Image 1: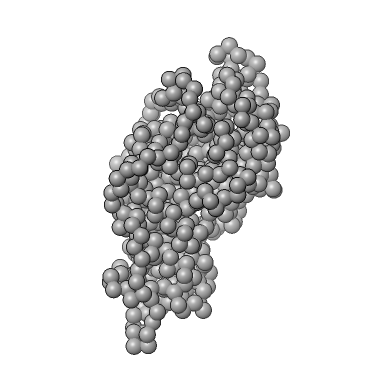
Image 2: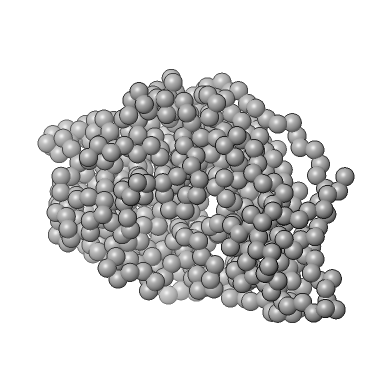
Length: 545
């Protein structure tokens, strides 16, 4: 039986009648076929399906031992047109703590509006803390299966994020989804399972990479736990992979990003634009550091991390390690930073290697996310990047090794802060998001790695969309293969905001050229964005493709 929808006010401003259509303006009939039976999965633990030899990748590649000042910039070049598909991130709580789809009627109407606006699809976090919360290898995919079926009916695509981190405590986190309870049980017995800073503060966002290969999760290693989870996802969603589900983004750290949790916002620990702190003080990371130091005959270097690296909210020049001619630029500093960054690269390679074996042959892209740490980028040491695990300084390109590591497995590098301009940032923070994005574009081009992007903070204005358009173009460096907009909320569907989004999507479909929809919409687009005349009232109905 057909059911006429009027969506919930969750994503809607019903009083706005001047802008393009929001979900509230859909007076559509949508039939609801029965869902497939709900899916509760009990899986058997297994080792990785395939073993991938890992070639050690040094952050000093290409340096030839020579210290020189690197200018991270772009030369001019020829621009080519290329369609850039646009996705939208769904709310963090799209699936509830009980494993059910939240506000399905409102979500259905919102997805129809996105489809009508020309959107390619949506991105959703597939939370480890929700799916496997009832016990090891006990998976509940119900809410996500319902979501994928809804998206399929509407004609959109899905980017599914394997979210092995907790939600809560970072920029934009609007709800709390911790790691699975049984994982927290193990952490309570052994607090060294999570990242730890110099003062002993534990961070429960993500399991420390120091124990990646140890059976610390009720007999399984973290890599095996992540692998079993992805394998179960593949088996349950096999009919949708390569069709509706076009991309699997593999979480590798806090916020799903390949990095250390060096700038946690929870409890006011860190505030922008602080330099953050190294996260290498759990017993597993300390043991690794000690072994690396002994291997080169410098046992004293393995006793601890840098003693002069300061605190979360200091500036580089306030510290002995990060100041202009600080310890970072000494033989000891180079040893420590190589060890710290290469441990992160090895972790990413292990997780991506597992994902590559599991999703091979499914016609689904793999991607990995790298954080856009743009503050203090104009300083020599790039301190916030160093504490996060990116060995990028005035003399060293830290993004080429990351791009190569992803590129060798055919993984798309997804980078943030695409919407930001240098002139919008506070002067004292020495920010350069534009310079950082250019450097990453050059690194992915040099490595032959596909680049995708997203915005770091919610923006609805033409200026931000214009910056993304400029970044998306293919020039002498990499253009974007896709863009994911953060995030679907009620403000996005407000009149002028939604009109800006429609213009943006249209421009991205034309290879980044700034193409704006006219008030009369003479281009026969699928969404009317002008003002309505009384005689044209029939055009008020947007028709999903």
